[in-house]
Image (cartoon, rainbow, N blue to C red):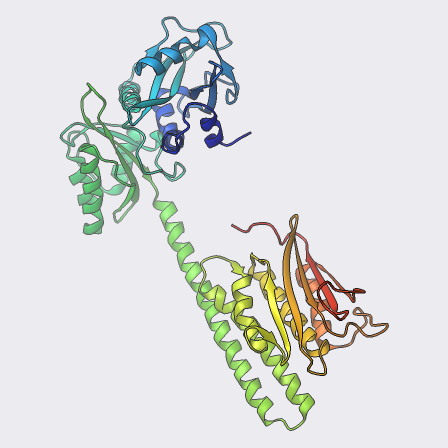
Length: 498
């Protein structure tokens, strides 16, 4: 199935601003469906004269009248006549008679979706007539608000210009209040009353100045004034961002929307949700995240201390082999420390491997060289990996680069080393290619007793779950010598991490 933007572009909503307007409506129309007790479908005209359904949503407050998925379906002829009239005349159209032909009787209203004076699509509201309800105050309030929002859709004043994360917004069933033109609560749903009681409000909510009432309940006066200002802004016709109001006993998420339908009474709609437990968990996660980052910071500091001690010890060694072994240990410990330093500065449990390698490679020599004569360059992107995989990968790469610089050019002759990262489906393939002297005759990397290769084999098999291959190709393009190619394959490491 194509994206909503593609489907809109195929129809009449071809300008980017028109597409964005329709997308914002779809992002926020669950509110309208719940208030209407109706299914909503969005239709655009095609060049063939037919009408194409590009989006659909079902209400959470009533049984659906459209159990089938209508997205991608087309209608034309008499069935499309209400669409044509609403689109041409720019006004809502209600079918004269209900549709009794299907398994579920329904009544359809078609609302033009206007943007900058141009009707770019039509919105169909299908109400299930098989459901009988008593005309309660709550239901009548919902329907009145839905009617106002539909008129605002027709006038082009809804949805708001700023996209909203529908998952984070309060829903109709969480708590709803309707305000009059003076900002006083004309109606509050039972859930809204309960939410304000948990907030610590003991007086009457209905009839009160909701902005003042909500602001006074906040522990933080500055935050309370901000929420109150947002509610007042909605009454005057603006769309404020959702905000939290926190008291001693509870935290409410408050979203206010203006109700300024042409010819209707002005006011505002306020949705509230009790997010006390959610915010408590958020704070716990932030505390845990800060603790973990502090641990990474301390581990990094401890590793740097160990590296400094090993470096001091290496300077006191008179045996060249012992000094070289200690210097290699310093390099390995420092590589691990860089990974922990990256984690200490990140809020995610993933590591940007390219950033780490750019900081580790200078430890092997110059930023653009590994060893005294071999020049290296990095090709491709490693991307992000979980911390548990990033540390062994960085160690493996540094070992392979150091091994290439040490053994491919023993006589100090100039040469080149390439570190290449590639994607093969979901796999990450890392190649270390040099143009040095190649592998010795009969060399078996699996049987080598060199410490560096032993570390590489152990990390690849036990930590990364990958495979390692070393070859000396007959000829390497662009190089005069045979060289060596090491190929490291990591299954699943090429998938995006965010």
